Amino acid sequence: MGGVGKINNSKFNKNMNGTIRTGGSIFPTYKPDRDRKHELTGGMRLDESGMTLRDYIATESLKVLVSATENRDFYTPASFADKAYRLADAMLVERAKTEVAK
Image (cartoon, rainbow, N blue to C red; front, side, top):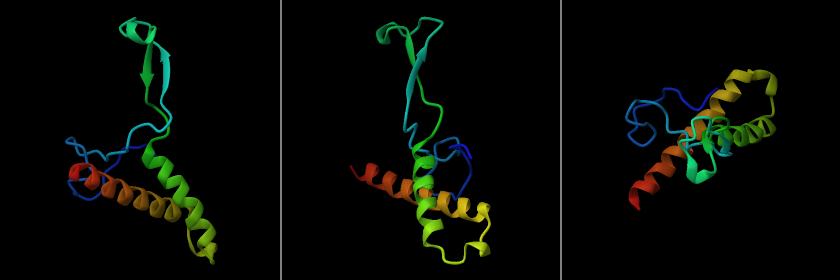
């Protein structure tokens, strides 16, 4: 469940290459830069791998979906995950609309 996938054709939720806008890394870290191209950061480079904003929103949504569902046996884990990522995608679309409006 990485931060990149294909969903509807909304102009707000996709980058130019057709991948979903994930909101970027939510917990970026710095890693050693072996090529020493990043002297301004003390030889460290920004590493944005890991959990994206999309993943974080989906995780938080999943908690609510599972706890608010009375008959959990009716749903599969995949259906919960699908709903959580749909909510995250919808939130990122709305976020992009407000960024465009600024």
